[in-house]
Image 1: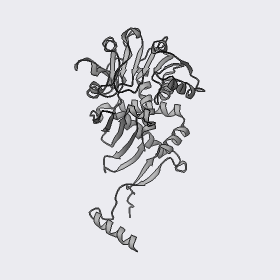
Image 2: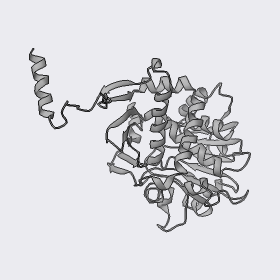
Image 3: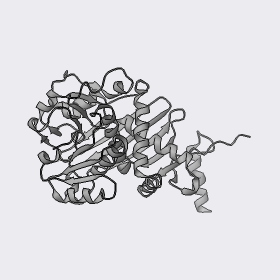
Image 4: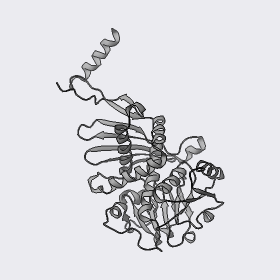
Length: 356
């Protein structure tokens, strides 16, 4: 007699267990392996369902669902973006995600994704720079030193070989926090008094600010030829970081144009302004950096396939790491009656058990 698998029990990775898992593997290893996992999925881009994220906007923030499937697994992420939360002692971005088996429709993983999103966002940034940044780039300006900053710095160190980060934030306390957290990582860290000072000598410029507004973190005269810009903070309608003239001078690379045109820096441009899709660079269909003097811009907004890659990555780790390490808990999440059509009977049997 074949024993039916207990599909109603779903592994759940809590915040505590996610931190334990990341620390067990090592942050640098996780960032490197996540970047590789994302690249593998980008190389099979045509297999995925693709849609811009489903967003519910309010005056104070946004709540979004990000779904995709490769035909075998289905995944989605719930994520918010509320810049005002920081002033209230809350996270600006929080998230959780689910991975399911397309064959049965049953979930196979439920996970926190606040920490995992920070890791995958940084891994995606570094992956794009691996393909677009100037050869031998060793110094990065990091403008915006909030919750994402350290992950970005460590990802660029692990994936791209960055040796120096130059920090700037409107809030000096954020810069001090970031510099302190990066102490002992092997990176040379320089705290700067302005964005202009931060970009001096940097071959890569990463902007990762949080305010939901049309901002000008970088003006056109600040950006010289030959740099790579990693624009992370502009990720919803009405929220940008770069002066429009920078975009007009740049070779722009995006994840999924229909989403980026709504949410990214290119919302400032005409709807038909030419952009290049990063997955096509990875598959050799189009070129990356054209020459040493080119300005390349990764207009990063975060796409569902990256979250799918991250969920599949941690699900894979649960399958291969020793069960004794207990990086997940079992959730009794799906009703599982003995007879699939007798859901009410299952309820009655529970009632009888409680009375007995």
